[in-house]
Length: 190
Image 1 (spheres, rainbow, N blue to C red):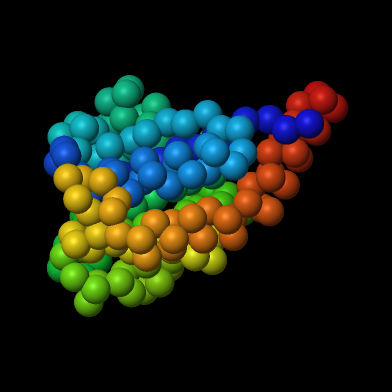
Image 2: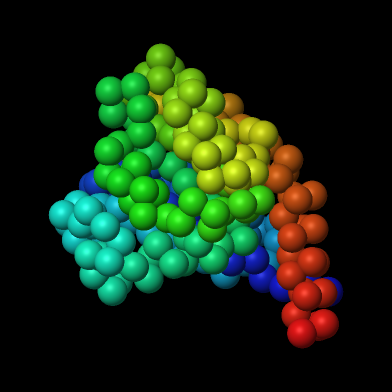
């Protein structure tokens, strides 16, 4: 028996339409085709104006606090940020600064990023992976990086990128299926 996984997807883009958002949605769709999921999408472009002025969690508006709580209760995170000056956006980092430092222990995190060229592809391993290692999360082994040329009309169109996204999800499935089964078993016991 399996229980739908609570998948929380965070798009670090501040605009819409967004290649980062398109990448996040594609990854979530692939996961949903493989295992039962319940999805919550957080767009920093939407919550950002109410997040930016807060310096402490107690200052967050209720709707932004609910987004942080959703991240903290996720069975799986799918996170992506556009690359700004060789790293994730400042607002992306500010958002995760409010997440409790022990809330993501052992939570699988699928990492993704978008940028203008291949020169920023290492952002996943040099910036995103260390951020989520701080939380003791389980960053999944395959990250997905996309450039502007990998999209047509804000849809993934590059075959190599599509294959990389599929590989990232395929490699995560054993862990995701195990988490789904364990969650269902825990519910039966309770």
